[in-house]
Image 1: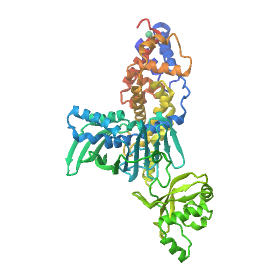
Image 2 (image 1 turned 60 degrees about the vertical axis):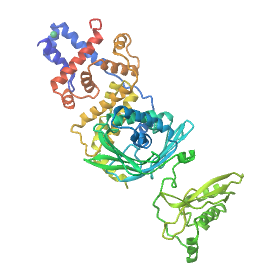
Image 3 (image 1 turned 180 degrees about the horizontal axis):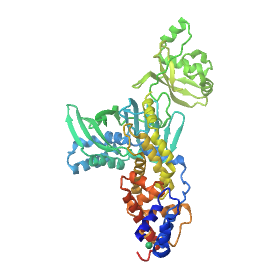
Image 4 (image 1 turned 90 degrees about the vertical axis):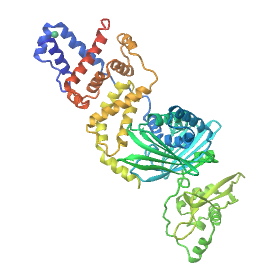
Length: 416
Length: 171
Ligand SMILES: [Zn+2]
């Protein structure tokens, strides 16, 4: 056995399934070769040095979970806040030239801080409780909305999925609302807001324009709009290259984006995965609009089956004739006077909560009912009113009613 | 209703996450040796699971073990790249022999630094052997590299470490 054979034999001993014994040839070689003996000893000692004990964890799994959740949630906003605020400068410069593209991006980032509040409604192919990063060409569309508000130097936002996940940010805390639970993260968890930050936006957009292979940008003009279409590949969160096409439609007079659509490649086809249904800028938003917990009223329309109602023909006729404001007044007064039987049909969905509702309204008066208001995504109507508490304090409240049931009665749908 | 297609898809794929779960302690030790820090390693393994669950249904890796370790390796190196500062190997050799690690954190950090002084392909074989608990033959399949190359990478890597540890003055 040569020294080289011996060394190879030692290496083989490090393989799995070895019983640790050296062959007789090796033992014999070691007896007359101190070099190899030392080689073997030192190799074992080196292997021993490479063993380690697992340290205990420092962070709790919960905080790590939140961090993970937060980073995964961002990808959709990359597109959204990017295309909504940044690309509106796109058509003012030549996108083909490298320098002007950079310049446009810097402008875009600056532009973002001037946009003020905005409200966007859109539909994406995704699931209600996925993080916002996932666009899946095989899924049906789900309605989503994004509200962003700047106040002083703070940013507030709310991202909401129809009948699903909602995330709010109040400048300090990020809260993820699920059906029965909330996850609260501090400012540093870096959830969605980092993507709304100009620097990050600029970085992501530079990536899209610079590092997207086979990127194509095309501009078309109509009488009132400019349509900019960009196409290229982007790394998704799984690190895979996926081909995207983004179409932005700008209003010529205002230079503001009026619509966006995103296609994603799926099995060779470009499938529409995101389409905006409404973009509004400089809208009046309040902190309350942004931060309130999701409830039925604000999680858009719910399909609810109306229960069978027992009412005499005369009662039914009266109920059908009632206006929404009359119904609102009747229902609220029934609760205040602790006679819910005067609004049994209307309070159907609140049966289990009646005692708490009545306690909460005890001694209150209602007044100043507004005209019924409608909302685009809500099939009922909303009536605002003033609620005066026993201590004289007055609040503006609302009640949501709908009558799309076979009886055509007003039923309380939210707000209470 | 919309959630059903997704659930069905995940059920079909349950095998890979299952395998990853069996492999978890080895994947964790492997990630630890790359990152030198348990929390980061746990995060990287967690990312790996999320990646597995988010994978498109039509993507079926040919070698699942290889897929797991390749993905985890990439996740770990991404994390390393994001770190602002790393200890230089030069410091390492001067500190190593005098002050053996006294707690588990130091021990792990020490192992990570030792391995970071090696050419990546040699360190990788050593990691897969010791922390992934793979045989040389398995490593050869996993890395799609001839068995003889795997063994020689292991040998040269170990010899370099050995010389650094025991023959510092000579090298
Ligand atoms: Zn010898």
